[in-house]
Image (cartoon, rainbow over all chains, first blue to last red):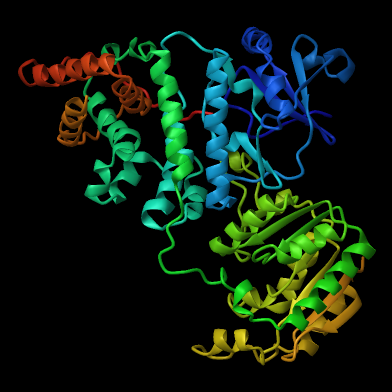
Length: 464
Length: 73
């Protein structure tokens, strides 16, 4: 079979996504064609796609695709995005930007008498720091008086996760990853202090829907039917615009400071060390010319930026520190870099999950790196999480055949701090052992000591 | 308007949570209608009237089973 259905595309009977080689197709079923044709008459899709807010969709002739299933349907082709990421891998400003895009599109769509049939955060992806809406089929003609079907979903997938951080200082990632559909309002409202519930927006979008839901549970279904077409259009627009201005004001609450957020500015590294590292990375990228680089432990994205300036086309940065990720995202946004910073606990990467364990593929199933950078990263796994060096290196090499890895010796103050309160069980943890294990699987192209404490960079190439 | 808003606060906060199940979108729908204004007030009063009436009227056991439709795109 040459066309593979996307495992996450099963909810909406009006269309399905298929992949063939490197191409992405969206098949519109007979049920969906009428709505699609109506939506098309407004030019909303093409206008938004010109602005880069909605993914491009080109109609292709089904006859030319050599698939009998497609012969009677409308088929769209979308450009392939460099990487698919999920809201539980995003930091606060990314989720906020995605929420803002969703609401902006809703407002603009309503002006054209269109509505989105849902408000799934998974319908938004990032190209570098720019969000883009990908599910063109969720646009439907607006029916007079209709309510916003996606309100509950918007609250659970965007609003509550943002409020969790903004009001309580707790990051959304773990809860979101566990639940996939976001943070349910009934659970979230239980965490809110009583006085917060009296704030107007929190009351209207979190407390009231939960209370109304409880109230509605005692009603016969027919007493509620028909109510969903009683909302004046002006009120609907008002809900969107007020929600947008509220979401735009939300800021993360920093309760106890971040582990690595100030790393960059702590001058932990000497200037000379930074320069040596930059030169090494630059030389590596210029020589190996990778298209996509994964920067593990990207911190604020300093070396990701070097990689991009040295010729890499995309960098996907990973870190587990939220403040660092937020700074990396701001760097990408301000400097217009093709850098996508994502949340990662290296010892527990995103698993394959959702329906049939296939809906949201795990991080390792989405690997697309031509090269990896792992600077000041190794010790977090080998010392911090007790992962043996051979296993760590095997994992690293499995991500991409070439890369740069930094070894942090025991003499380094950072490592001494990590070991200060625990027994040193790492008797074999030396530069020599690290080098030997690396050489079992790789050819070391170049190695350089970059600090007085003996931090060493290895440029390696896997041997087959 | 402010008075109505305060009234909603008090009414909604006084509701005792029920643990049976209906379409979880119902809460969002009602909240939007309330945000929508006058129509919402009518709906809310109707709902509270139903709740009040149910104290005196025996519950109809033939009520169709309510479905969970929490899975949305």
